[in-house]
Amino acid sequence: MNMDINLSAPLFQAEDIFGKSIALSSYKGKKVFIGFFRHAGCPFCNLRVHTLTKCHEELQALGLEMIFFFESKKSIMLRSTFHQEVSPIPLISDPDKNYYDAYGLESSAKKAALGHLKSFVKSAIQAKINGLPVHMMADGESISTMPAEFLLDENLIIRKLHYSQGLSDRLALDDIYAFARQQKGMTV
Image 1 (cartoon, rainbow, N blue to C red):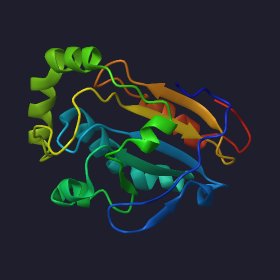
Image 2 (cartoon, one colour):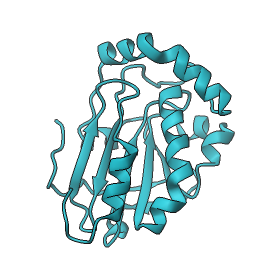
Image 3 (cartoon, one colour):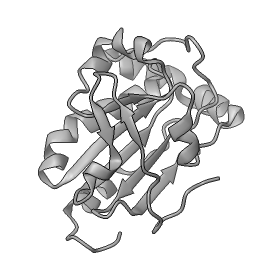
Image 4 (cartoon, rainbow, N blue to C red):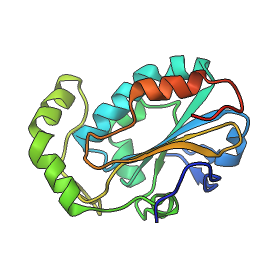
């Protein structure tokens, strides 16, 4: 079941792929972007992570923290130099999709297939140009996972969310910056 705005975000405590304990409750008082991505070789997701990583310091200076989830196993993510370079942004492996379920993410083979057919080659080429990993699913990863992104206010209330309808369908970067710039207590 999908989440909705103005609800408290489901709390979690997990270990990121680098062994650091990440508790959402410890982010109270800060704004948070939570991104749920597909598998570690997905060019659509890796392009998005690349873009967000390049903006990380600027968004963090505006008071916005980031947490990324991937459905890939920790061992797969640690083999990827690209994913290791995402640090200091917490990168959480959730192959059982416990957190995906808690945040209402859906699986849709039809949406994923349409996304692949429409723009996979273009995205794969762009990812390779940027030195990002592109590979087939491995060890339990799914082709049908659909990404989602959430913006939480300082009280960990969901103020903006986006359940992707296609593999390159994400929150607009301008909307993320606008949210980060807002005064405390104001809604989107």
